[in-house]
Length: 244
Image (tube, rainbow, N blue to C red; front, side):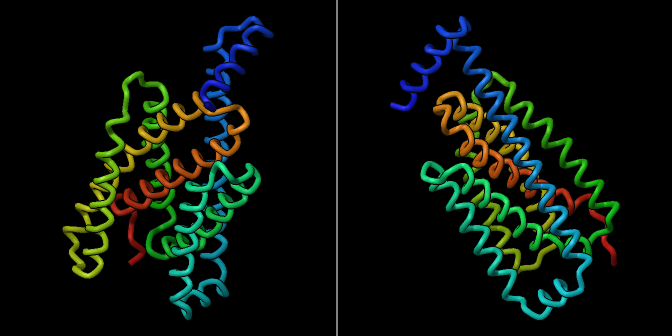
């Protein structure tokens, strides 16, 4: 139903502006993708500044050192926001969805500040730029390719489930070799997910009504933000220089 209404709106705009429907659709997709990348970049900046602030604050460091349960609360809060935004995106207003995304970015910043004590600042910056380059190449590929990547979805999802299980097992096993294998597989999974998620967002933008563009941009930003952060953390295993 929404697809038909969306097409009717496109043809109305075509009659009004004497432009082909494909041009109007392309303009909407371009607008949504710009908002996705801008929102995602905002989220990354919020996470980075939150982490830097926490890493330089004795009060924050002391609190988390004395209250190990706080990290579990943050993990549960993150999962709640991700599932809440993903499942309820059609019921949320754009403002509410954006507020939840910003809250998620702040919480993630609180969780990631310990990396500044595990790795040198130079290696963190180097890994960030490597991640940005890899992410940029794959998201451009996902956006520009005419190849249907939909079959990647089920494969990557199953691989992600396997990765999570292997990571949980390795918490108890503590195998360095297994840890390296998990990191390699994790990088490959999130490289693939970046391309696949980009194409999925583009596809949804083509079929979504114009009124949903704001909510779709937030959902897309959250999805790509997660791809970027996870890719960064796995790459940090390879390029991060320990402070020890």
